[in-house]
Length: 130
Image 1 (cartoon, rainbow, N blue to C red):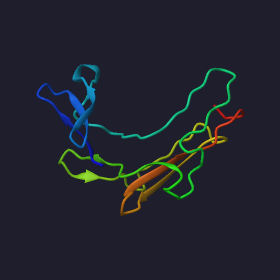
Image 2 (image 1 turned 180 degrees about the vertical axis):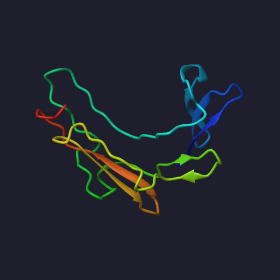
Image 3 (image 1 turned 180 degrees about the horizontal axis):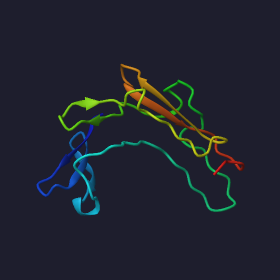
Image 4 (image 1 turned 90 degrees about the vertical axis):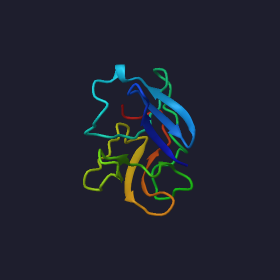
């Protein structure tokens, strides 16, 4: 699976999966679309007040098993020189605002089919930290 972005003739950004455009980001809604100092990947859940938080992903916390857990694989960014980079371990940070219910783990470069990867998810529940 190949994802990438490109700029159209009006400097708008297009998110493409292989040969199909699946997202469009007009230049007018962003103040700086030429460079970035942060890149993020994540997941979230939402329920009405008083309703238990649902499972995220498969419902499993990160466990090094890319068969059952929810994950992002081959994460990275293209530098201004056009070179593709994965997030270096010493620059990657994880943030979990529901540690009683969910988890996140960054694994760095696992090579093979998953490359630079991270796992996330968990069972949810009535006592999630928000």
